[in-house]
Length: 107
Image (cartoon, rainbow, N blue to C red):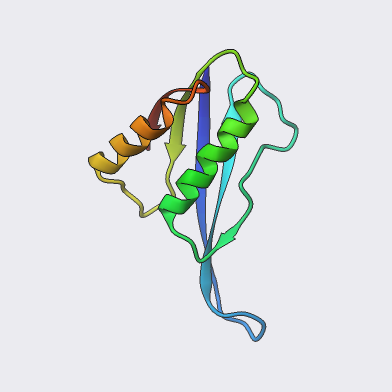
């Protein structure tokens, strides 16, 4: 089974009601599952990409908790982000121990 986690970064301008900032969010797709509305992590203001990766994997595990088949998970990073190989391996090692996840790749 294949799954995709798409991470998004939004930069919002300063207004009279808020300061300039960024937010991260993720959308999860799982092959063969129709969620109606795809599972998301919501928006998290002024965080980091690594924080969003962790939130997205936790949400993915929640979605897949009753699945019998482990998924090959592809993580799609927002434009402008490139993880070093050591960090990619860290996440692959960290999350592939979960029974819901077979492998982790980044694009």
